[in-house]
Structure formats: structure tokens, C-alpha cells
Image (cartoon, rainbow, N blue to C red; front, side, top):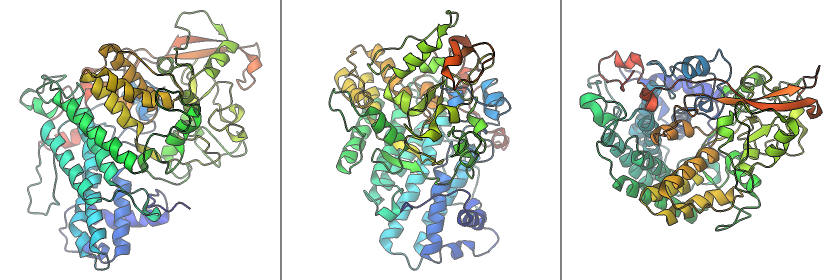
Length: 599
């Protein structure tokens, strides 16, 4: 199969590797056993430790990484993209209706430091491996710096300033490490990125594809500086007062230099990519020219393993029936139709996670104009109107969703992806089925139930530049970079020159391009969107409902569907404290860390 360092959850080899390393990688050595010496006694065992470091570092924020993270759902369900799913699940009951409590976070705070410690131990001990050459050892040390930078980046975005651990502890060390300032945390991320960049190669041989490169180090740095420049952190005053600890959640100044730093980092990232065959995929367009292959190019970028747009992915190449994360994304039950379960035996987990009308309105039609969707209170429209308008939608919508009554666009001609096989019904009186349902990550996947989560795609850095240049008042450069992404989607160029209106168009592009990729939940907070409590994170959600001919109920028979209309549905909770996440109360009760305001 693929020549890769596989990070396979559920395979016997990985389970045994994890269990044999768990003790020495999770706590300081105090018992005098020889576990570290055993693991670093050969390159074979050290390489297993390396694979485990990737698995446990890059899972940050993805489903089912244990502990206090939100379970049984996806971030889309609390991001204003989709409904949150089953009503009994954490993501519905514990978050949507009441917001995060001080015992919940989206990444399981404590596991960050478990991963960081593992990586530090590998870096500290890799020189002990007798049959490994010096170049390989140096690469691994750089990889550990990069993996830790990735973990700190995720915490920086979620919590602000966090404790900085830059060495492995022994029993005599003071383990009471307080939270650092926002600036110190950012500086640590940049330091780790620079160390990783200095030591990593530009590319790996085929057998090692998937490991960190210099490009990934630049990507982590670019994202960190982008979030540092956004208004949540780049402000004279914090979103809520934290008293003498305001510097943990706010820089204390609004400084345009942060946007300039973001420009420099993102330009360097794109320059590196162009020099190393890594760039946005566009095979049918050009500068200010709509891409005629938009569906295939965007679908490939988000779904095809090892494509040239993805710098780094979380590689869990195993079936959905063995890895629960996939069960929240693939709507296919079985290869033989609705009665099968060989592809996803818990397909019901996707049933009530339909897209909300609020998010549908963000998408463009294929000609670049806005679609006319019904408002709450409008008269019902015939189903033929719904079907026709869905067929008019842009390529990214079709790559990422299927519409009610229409075979999935993402796997054309494949009966496994016919509407009759994949649909979970429509809303008639209840809620959850949405205006459409997701097929994201499965473009031309056939019966493959796994996907490789794209952690960094090149389109991110063009949108970063569009955003940063606009904030610096350079609309020409902002439009140049925005349209690289917009044109790739098959859409005509945007020409808006007003800074405020262009800002909203750039944010709109972010929302569409990275639908379901765990970005919107954080982006809208760090942008401090004025409408965040009005149907984005909180506020009134809307969904379509459908009516049928008397005695008919099957939405796969479209001639039986009479009409559709828009209706209010869930109204999730919002409070300004939610701009950042709480540190779990179990950590706060140790009286070392201070809590974010409002929790």
C-alpha cells in the first residue's frame, strides 16, 4: 500500500507500541527500570517511538483523543456550519445548549503535555540509538521541535498563554509551571518552528512521505502569526478582564506590525511551496480566470491522500468500523446499499448533522452570484425549486455535500453514493437533517471509508495573505491572493476595494474553502465577528423542512416531495467567555494555573 509512516489507530502493532511506551513517555522516570534504554536500543524501536509521536501529537482537537475533550460529534456542529448531531451526545447537550463548562475543551488540555513530554523524551534520548546515523538523529530532533510547535499552536489558539515546558522533568524538578504570557507563548512557538526549519529536510523519500518538512515548519509559524495578528489577541484590552493576568489573553496593544509579520511568514511559505512542487491545485484556470476543473481540483485537494496541495495530514489509514472519527463523516452504510454495514456500521451518527440554512447562504452560485433561498416565514416553494437551485451551486458545495433527493456529486456514477443509499431522510417536523448533508473528504473515494485529515493546505496561506494585506490597506494584493482561491473554485474574480466589505468577503471565502476542516470554530472567534451570537456560534439556527404527497415519505422518490420551506431550529448558547476555552477545573484546582475569564 502507501509507502508512508502510517499512524494507524486500532492495529495490533500500534496498540502494543503504545502500551509499551505509555509508562516512560507519560511520567518522569522514578522507578529505575530500563524502559527508555530498551526503546532507544535500536533504530527499529526508536522508529516505532517516532511513529507514535506523530500519532499522539497530530490528533490534537480531532475526535476521541480521550479525557475532557468534547465527544460524539464534530466541531462543525458548534461552529455555525451544521447541526450538532444526536441529542444525547456531548456536543449537543453539553455545548450547544449551555456552552463549554470548566471541565470541557476541544483538545483535552492535559493531553497536550503528555504529547509534548513524549516528544522531548525522544529528542533527549535519540542519540543513544547505536545503529542510527547522525543525520537521521538530527532530523528526528527537528521533527520533535515541529510536533511540539504544532501542539503549542493549538493551545495558543484555544487558551491564549499556556505553561511552557521545554525540558523533560526528573523527580527533583519543580513541576509547578505557571501560564506564560501570550507573547512568551508565541515566542516559544516561533523558536520551535525556527529550530524545526533549520533541521528538517525539504522532502522525504517515498517510504517516509507524511513526515514534517521545512514547509510544515513554515506553515505552523504562518498560522501562529496570523492568529496573533487577528483582533482577539491584537488588542489593547482583552475581550473580558483578567485583571493582572490580561497579558495571558491579549497583547495589550493593537499593532499593525503583527499583520506585517504575518505577511512575511505567509509569503515565505508560498515561496517555499512553489519551489518544492507544493501549491494550490488549479488545472483549468489562471490569473483572474475561473477554473473549469473546479470540482475535481478542490475535491482532490480535500480528499485525495498525498496530493500536492496538502503539506501535512493526520494519517489514520484504517476503516471507519475500526476508527470512530470517520463515522461522523462518511454517510455510506455499506458497499451493497442501505442494508449493508461493511463501510460504516454507525452511519446514524451523521444523520442529524445536516448543514444549517445560515451556512448555506454563505456559498455562491457557480456564476459567482448569491443564491435566493427562502427566509423563515416565506411561503413554501415547490421541491423542483430546491432541486434546481441546488444544481446551480458552486463546485465546493457539490464536492462537500449532497442535496436531498439528488445523488452525491462527489462520486458521480457510483451507486454506493446514490441518494437512495446514503440519505438519512429529510426534516418534516423535526430537525437535524438540514438543507443538505456532508460528503466532505470523500471525493471519488468509492468504498474507502477512511481519509487523511488535511492539517495544512496551501489555500490557507493565500487566504492568510488576502486577510493580512487587507488589514494593512493594500487591497490590490489582498484581491490578488483572494482570487487565487476564489478562481480555483470556478468563480469569477472579486473586485471589491472597500476594506470593510472586502474583509467580509475574505472571511466568507475562509468559511467555504475550509468547511468541515475545524477552522471556522476558531476563526470567527479570533475575528471577533459582530454576528457571532446571531446564528454563527450562538443564536438562531435555521433548517429546511419538506412536505410530501399524502401517504408518501420516501425522499429518494423526488416526485413524491411537494415543497420545502425554511424554519427556525436550534438556538445554541453564546457568552463572551467562549472566545477562549476553559482550562479544565482539575488543573485549576491544583492552584498553579489561572482560569480564563468567565469560567
